[in-house]
Image (cartoon, rainbow, N blue to C red; front, side, top):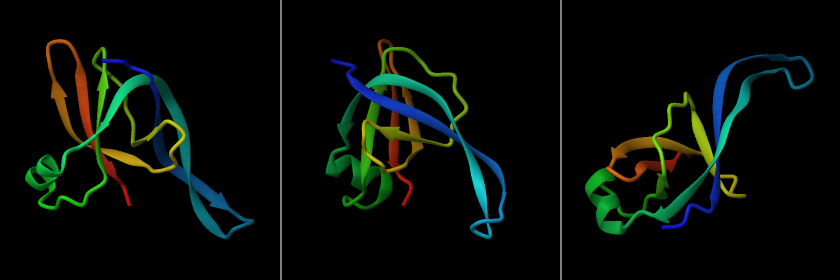
Length: 102
């Protein structure tokens, strides 16, 4: 198993008012960047977990357990925000099942 895909973890906090846009913008902080093994979730597992096979879900595997406080993650150069759905602790890897936040 190769851990070659960069995964960036972000923490979204309470932001401040932006007078230029007239809206409150959340404060986003890059927490960490880790290398991982990323695979798509199978349609059978999507149906079992989410009740729908047409869900954008991925399995993100790390060599060690992560002790991070994060809101969402970005995988590689993809702009899709993924949030944590389920955590799996195995003897040799630490895996997170993530789903698209949209």
